[in-house]
Length: 349
Ligand code: NAD
Ligand code: DAU
Image (tube, rainbow, N blue to C red; front, top):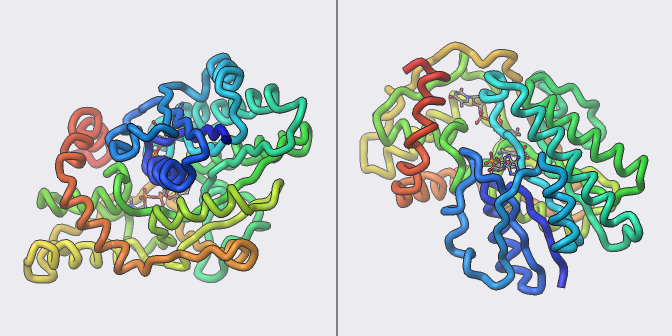
C-alpha cells in the first residue's frame, strides 16, 4: 500500500488525475488535499467519492503546521502537487494571492516532505506539476524544450517559475527526490469557465459576446486533460528522479481560429447553420503583457516514457462541447456567485 498526497485534486486537472489514480491503483491510498477555493469543486469527483482508497482532506497548503501534522498522521510516500492559483488574468488583478499559494504553499509542502522523509528518501517522491508559461513567450519559430531558460512574464508564470526553482533547490540542497513537469494548455471537461474554451462554450450557450483579446493572433498548444493525467501517471511511475519533462499536445492554434472552430462545433451540436455563433466574436482590449506563442517539444516524453497524446484536437473539442452541454447543472452552479463578480470586473459587462 502506498499513501499518495494529491494537492488541488478538486480542481480541473487534479480531479482527472485523482479519478485515474483511484480507479487504476486500488492498492494506493489517494489523499486529495484541497482548500476548495472558487476553482475547487467536489462535484468533479462524485463518481469516486465512495471508493475505499479515496480520501478527501480540506486543507490549505500554505498552512505549514497543518501540512506537517498531515504528513505525520498519514505517512505520505509521495506528493503530486497541483494546488495553485492558475488563471493568468486573476494574477494580473491580484499578484499577491499567487505569490502566497504558488510560492509559499509549495515551500510549506517541501518543508513538510523534507522533515518527514529525511531519515530515508528511498521510495519517496515530490512531483511538482508546472506549466510551460515559465519559459516565457516564443516568436514564430521554435519550441520549448526541457533546457529552455526560464523567462516568466506574468505574475502567474513568475510564481510558478519561482516554485519550480524552490523544488530544484530542495533537491540540490537537501537531496529531496523530485520530478517537475511543464505542460501546455489543457482543455476538456470540468475546466472552470474563466479559461478561454469553457468561457466561450458558456457564452455561446447564452448568446453572449466571445471576448477575444487583442487581434486573436496569440498561439497556444492544446492538450486534452485526460492525456495530461495519463502523462502524469507515466512520469510518476517511470520518470527519472531529479528529471524534468515537457508535456504538450503538438497542437498549436491561433486563438481566433480556435474560437471560430469552437463556434462551428457548437453550431453543429445544436443543429444550427454553421457560422451563426461566429457573429458573437468580439475583439476586446488585450491582456496586459500577453505572451504571443507557446509550443512544447514533448519528444522526451515520447522517447523516454513512450507517452503521446491519444486524441486529435477535433475529437477532443467535440467531446468537450458535448460534456458541457450534458452537464449544464454543473456549469450553471459554477457560474453563479463569485463568477459573476469576476466576469463583470474582467470584461466590464
Ligand atoms: P485549477 O485552478 O482548476 O485548480 C486548482 C486547485 O487548487 C483548486 O481545486 C483549488 O481549490 C486548489 N487550491 C488553490 N489554493 C489552494 C491552497 N492554498 N491549498 C489547497 N488547495 C488549493 O487549476 P488546474 O488548471 O487544474 O491546474 C492544476 C495545476 O496544473 C496548477 O499547478 C497549474 O499551474 C498547472 N497547469 C495547468 C495547466 C492548465 O492548462 N490548466 C497547464 C499546465 C500546468
Ligand atoms: O500554458 C499553460 C497555461 O495555460 C496554464 O499554466 C494556465 O494555468 C492556464 O490557465 C493556461 O493559461 P492561458 O493564459 O494560456 O489560458 P487562457 O484560457 O486564460 O487563455 C488562452 C488564450 O486565450 C490566451 O492567449 C488568452 C486568450 N483569451 C483568454 C480569455 C480568458 C482571450 O482571448 N479571451 C479570454 O476571455
